[in-house]
Image (cartoon, rainbow over the protein chains, first blue to last red):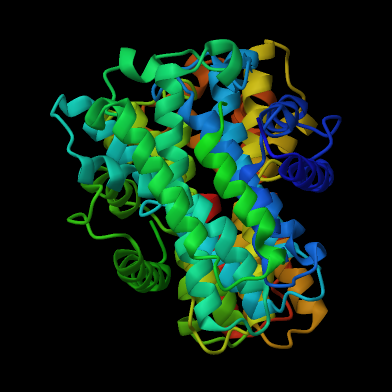
Length: 301
Length: 301
């Protein structure tokens, strides 16, 4: 059961980022309609919006107004949404279902899904580059753009996907270090950038706070992925909204497969605790970050 | 036959941008090797580098040092290269040959090509965001980032691709206005952004010069596409490096198909002349822009 304070916080963040995304996404009546409908379908469907929530929560922990974080919150969600569209393609994970709905290439078609993903990535950078929120100085915005681009690229998310592909094709048994390397890139880099963009928006954050928030995000990202693997084994399709046991069926290396279910759970717990330890010097404004860490480790979907 | 002065200028631009791209592209020894090799294959193969040349040529016309233009020149070429990788995919144009070599998904595989395109797009924005060239102020860099993102996205290049897809699937006969709308987005937007990024790098360019350079680029982009269509009809595979007559075989609308070959040639000429007229108030430093306009209209590959 999710902490009701977290539920309230997440609902606020979701409403805030969805409203910003609605504004940033092109109107479905504008040509090319099919592309704009596919982009909106991919972004505005049900979603936890964990990454934007992390941006807002990190901002709150360091005393920032949420107004200056709408652009990075939107941008990171657009990158996440595009990556799901491309990951689901037949040449990649070949998934028909995502968050309980038809994947983008199923609801539209493959070419449209490729282009929608491409256009969503461009939109993410456009949103950050054209953000007019006064408090974020131009050097801060450039630093955010660089952070997001690095987190998305070949040494971030896209690189993690490629490592994952190579690993699943090689048929070779992965060890824990290799699996961790995949996830640090595939999901960890973007989660970390969600928090880092908030710290970059601060005009003069002390380096120690920035360091601890970055460590928080790094541990959280890995815990998130381990929990994802655990859910794939024990969850039900109806709850997690994707085909259950798919990882196992595809012979993918997962934490439960490498460590066993009990040890995988312990590892997720340990990482959750380590992420919390990095918040020790923060006051109660960091509570949303704390709630998110607890949720990530205990979530059932 | 290409003007020897243009050949010299293009060779200089090519050497300059290829050297910058070599530096910006991740080393092929860095993990994930296959992704980095695919990215380098897609970018560093033979190419005319017309877009970077336009950036440098526009910069020269307004008295800028080429040093401040390496980042935008790289960035626009990275976007162009990623778009070719994705356009060639089986779900898109399904091409096996590009510039006389196997397309990226043929040389590697489809999933790697999708990810290489994605990572090249991210790298384009990373290069612009992390550029340390002193003369380009941070607001100018943000403006360049916004320009490139808009030119690449759903109301630019990716949108033009989607319009093209919709048109070729509908089986409906296109009129000239619809064809022009496709090309203004599909190829025109990025060509225009190549020139516009140079004008944005200027600390205080008079609006009239910026306007005329933008008009130059707009006319040039359309002329380039008409010439491309003409080449597809009359060129030989060996010269243009892709399968000849492919557009016709796929039943795609082209300028020669709509206007006849003679009138299509006239239209390309007229646009070439209009682009040159926009350079009338510029001195001899705009000559490379003039040579490029003549080349685009007369090129045989």
